[in-house]
Amino acid sequence: QTCALPDLNGLRATIKQGNLDPLLTKYKPDILCLQEIKAELEQIPAEYQHVHGYTLYVSASRARKGYSGVGFYIKDGFDVTAPVNGIGNEVFDVEGRNIVTTIQNKTNPIVLINTYFPNGGGGPERLDYKLKFYDAYLKYVDGLQKKGSMVLFCGDVNTAHTEIDLARPKENADNTGFLPIEREWLDEVVDHGYTDMFRHIHGNIKDVYTYWDQKTAARDRNVGWRIDYFFASAGLVPKIKKFETLTDYMGSDHCPIMVDVEI
View 1 (cartoon, rainbow, N blue to C red):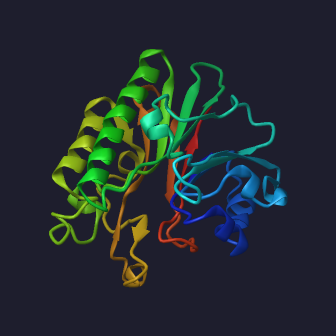
View 2 (tube, rainbow, N blue to C red):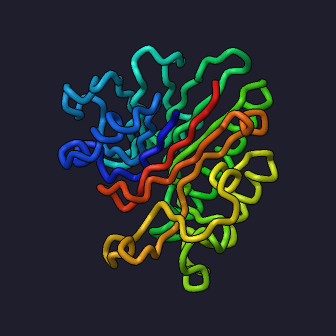
């Protein structure tokens, strides 16, 4: 069982608010993927570096402190390789946006990539950075698959793929997160053989989102975006038995998503 908790807006704040513990104690994932943790490992309270039978691993931003960052809580004894920071591209790895581990199983290993994709807002430079990150990322994932690994990647992609993935598609047609050039990359991901596991399991169900704008209380009205994903390579798809969107879980402008993988 792998659970992604996108866009914490700071792991330290999430811990302090009491919004981390229930994910570990109630849902008991083998791996909890965290994004936007905004901290280095030593900044996390010592009692939360090992908690509830889990060990925390962090990839922090080296570009600036208190920014971006991803991490894993891995259940003690769960058979994985030591997590690796980044995808081998310093231009993008410096922002602490990727952490990678390999889940051992009876057949092919499963490479799990936990990613906090860039937001395209803030001007043309950041949109360009996001698109270049997308291209480098897909090249990296394709390389893993060519080596014979099954691949599962998750995180806040910061783009809604199709019109049913957000409540107000027409109003957002010219906004980052739903620009044609951003959405085309998700088309390319699918064309390369990776499956959006939410759509695979739940079909064209509408009104299920993972992000809501807090300033406008959009969650109360379910005016949201589905921008958080699990994508699986072809050989892994039959092994994923369940996908949950935990829309009732509060504490962030995003909600957790979770998959059950047969290994």
